[in-house]
Length: 619
Image (cartoon, rainbow, N blue to C red; front, side, top):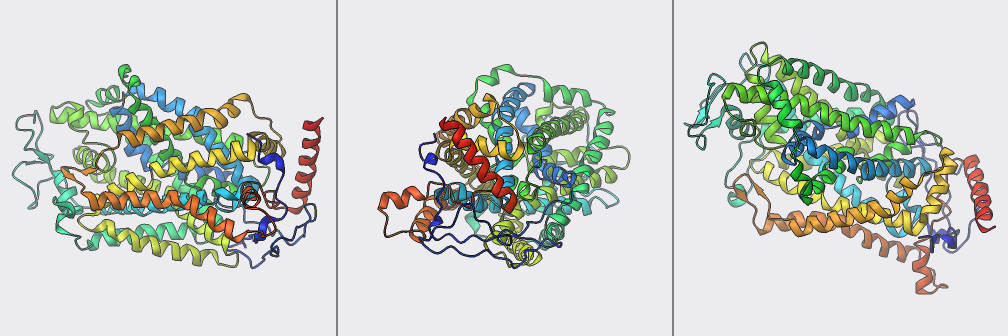
């Protein structure tokens, strides 16, 4: 595991330019740039310039950091994705694989990324001074984060659309309008609706597909349609909220987190109390938590648990690393990782009970089984099943509808900030004299321009492709590479030494076994299983053809190709003609002298600690 790293850090750096990053009080970088190393000229390891490492912006306090991480990790997936995933994969039995995956994969990965960002005080690209050959992992994660961000904000736009629609005197999806088909049934119809169920469709479903999305049932066969003006305006509003939350860097992000992290729990509690007072609510909750034990033998259930864990905790996208990079060097991220992991699981269960209590009431009103009102996870649950249930509330359904969609919008803002921060931090790390708000503005405008594609009649078709290929398998592949680089090439012993220096904590065998053996092996099996069982994507009855499939595959391949591409680029940049090919390659697998705390005093202490540690090991 430590065969490469025992050669010691690469003091030469092979021409690497070390940019010290400092942010002013407004979150923007200062113009301080450390001196560039000359190719082949060694830099004294113990010599530190006081102005070479200007201070990086930090969270105003630990509370804002923790709330920002909770807002980032606890998103709409906990509310509209987890309940259906759990219901579809064994109900209460799904909590067993999910909690096991959280304990042995999610939490260790979250903690690992916390440590990397806080130790190096930089983003997902610059941290690869720990093993420069894998710098492409950071760029690949940035591509994955960007693809997810583009459709994530478009879903926020849908939430905004429904929020404004909730202020109508009668909820527009409560009745069958002129857009409805002959089989439409609305909130005035109750009792047993199972007869001719194949031809019946709720007003909420038709409203979502025909009025809001204007879905083209022919998909891409008719080409691409024009953007919908109302959805485009809601998308613009969503991006304005994201931009304003990042205009001053972590200063404004931290302040926004007080609302984005706390408000959703207030609404969930209100919805839960109201839901549990409705007829059929407990039937719905029991349907959600009743275990179906046979499902545990299905590999697909464990795959779903890993997929949900990555999606929910946001590991593997670079966001966790970025948020911790603005911490003080001694911040107790060990505790923070435990708190956030708990809050994520708690919110999933809390949200699931809330959602299914109201869906149970809807099933009671319609006289059908609950699985007939659950039309799938994600958008069908959030914009069809749940609005249909809310529209049937006897008292002020508009209020509960507005609260629900504003809660989803708020959850989306917290997560979108994290995704957008990946691109912003990478740019600011690479160009330290760039201004934070200008970079945030450019990133937001680019996201808005890209997101317009989701407002066309084929928008949900494109979202399905981007969601599957952009934020799924590439993230797992890049995480496997990240673990190999850190735990096997840099070495678990060296990584544990860095943790001990930073947090004064020795890690138990649990962490070592998870990082070195269990997580890499399990993720490799998950990756292989996902490739073997993958099928042609579809949206409703429309099955995607070759062109859309190749487009999605291209997104995944480009993200993964960042690894070899950046390896060869870095090899050319740092090539030393006085060294052999093998020596030049080997240099890229060794940590550079820049893998260290950025504070000059801490760097001196770290070098001394590392020297003492090596002496104690050799004795």
